[in-house]
Image 1: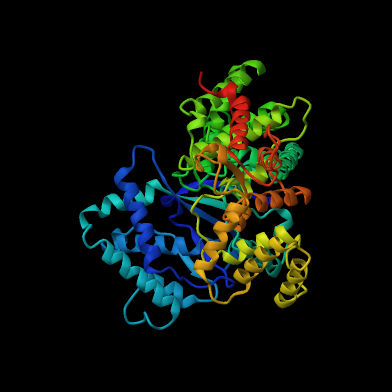
Image 2 (image 1 turned 135 degrees about the vertical axis):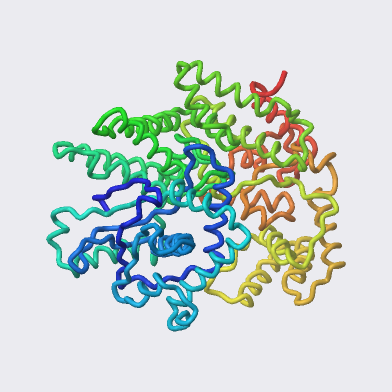
Length: 598
């Protein structure tokens, strides 16, 4: 779809047009719910519209086609919407005698000629003749019933539908090369586009519409074709860079309510200020308005200036990404929903040093009402924010460090807060008893996870072999754990007694004054959290070391905590005590101090 023409058209501009439904498309199939949804949407818009407002429907994709010695619009995509609009307008028309009726557009089905006739004369007698007639008749009845209690508003509704309701007209142009194609080749081209839009389930999204708007042939004179290719090439290069997750998750918040297949669309949404409440084609419509305003100033639209705005916006994001300090500070702010548009505005107003100071002040604002030492597990958002910033600032505190905090792994793996020392009074239930007992068996015996090529029975036999090599105390604990792991019936009392015994063994039952305090919390990824939420400290420590040695991302402060880097008194590598927690909190406050309230 390189040669395209793209514009918005109010419905009244379709009057008199002739549309052809090709044979590769199914017949009309809109249900009652879909028809009512369209009517309700236009109705709601009609009640709330201001001067010059418009309601925009999804794209209609067309191409010129020869049929019965005349040129018609072959409807590649949008048949269902246009047929529904025809039925609504036909209902309005039939209020008047034939001489006073408005001219509508026509819809012809290339291989279902009877459907064309029935569409012009919808009646009860023939409604069950075929499936097309059934759905066309049903829509007609839905329209009639919907307007029963709105008769006095029909004129107003009709005016809104004709004058303030627009479609996105996406014309695939027939250039000289295509005109020379045979009918079969032309149809194959149309089928390819139709397949992509429908069977492939890849919608013509806002990014593709904007691309067509920029690259449509009419924007370029003959001698400017290289300019068209240059914009297309730069477009692809920007999309390629945005597909790099390390860059993407630096500028994209995991809390965003909008998801993107074409990531360049996010760039356009940022530029145009789109929110989650705006319609899908919000940014596209803003670009159309910009283009139309430019056309009013000059007969020939020069898209270079518009494209330069897009490119400069992206280059500013890339500049932040490549600056070690700004990458970390801005990445943190974006994750906590600070406006990129506001950052853009300030970066244009200030020099680099002033902008860095501004960014730091915005981070201080995020922590202004937080007293770190008073934070507890229940303050989930604040705790997670503080722990993320602690990790980021720890990386920045080493001036020679070139490593970047991986926002992609942090966001994609859903990192969350978890207790370091198991919560006192926690119970092991039937759902998590196998994982809990296996974690401890692996800790004591050193056995790895079960290989896929052996049975569960063989795996248990390997565990038993390892248990036999332990001393008597560990052997007794492991035999009890093996019983919990292998028993078909869950013995709650036995399991809980064993849990409490092991809590004493690993000093999990003493030492931490407030188990919910931030000094007993760390960032762990979602999968690891699920797997050892009930695990003892040494089991968690073993898993952290294993993940880190296997190249799996572990936040630097989480790793430092479990390796006891913050602990001043190393009286037990396998225990997490109050002095460890206090040292951890001291380090946290020291690192965060420049961003905390006085």
